[in-house]
Image (tube, rainbow, N blue to C red; front, side, top):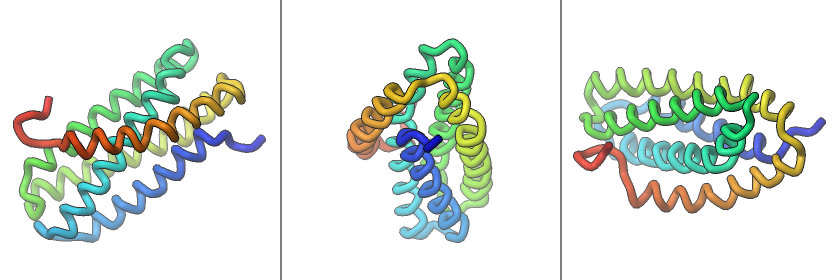
Length: 161
């Protein structure tokens, strides 16, 4: 059976995010290149997570067999968001920023592997083809809108919750 578009869309984003994390890991110091790539990564992850929550996770929360997986993943999104917010408040060239980056990277890569290896297969078993098609449409519609919101609401500083 072919993989549904929603999972293809999410996996493509994950692959892009993995590449960005790998590139960030090679950059050192408080450089403009590091800051720009981190901001690009932040926008990508925030828009991805919000659109994923509005499409796949919203449906999973309404499906008793999938509810715990969705709750777990939403909590991990919040954890990553909080870590990135903390990083925005640090000197990008500091040892503290580097340590927090590698912790955030580990947590995020664990999260997306868990989604791909456990959550997507579980959802495939519970959701019908028409639902998965609608989820892809919702995700593809919401992600650009969530990107606009992420750009308008940067992490860090005193306004962060």
